[in-house]
Image (cartoon, rainbow, N blue to C red; front, side, top):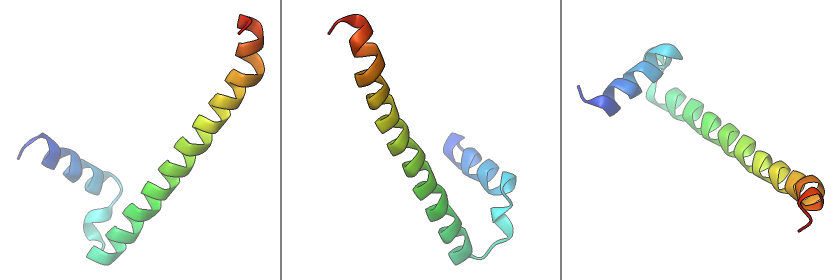
Amino acid sequence: MNFIQRKIYLYNVTFGLYMLEWWERYLFNILIVVLLWFVCYNGSRSAAEFYKSHLKVKLGV
């Protein structure tokens, strides 16, 4: 078992995905990917807005 297979196995065991059907696991993984995308997208927008409104003014750019 290589490194990636161990991490996938750990992910399945940690979240209890090993006992789900293949289509339930698929839906769960899609939900996780969408939530991660939402968090990253909005986090980057917030960081850009923070940079524009606070740091740019303080740095004199």
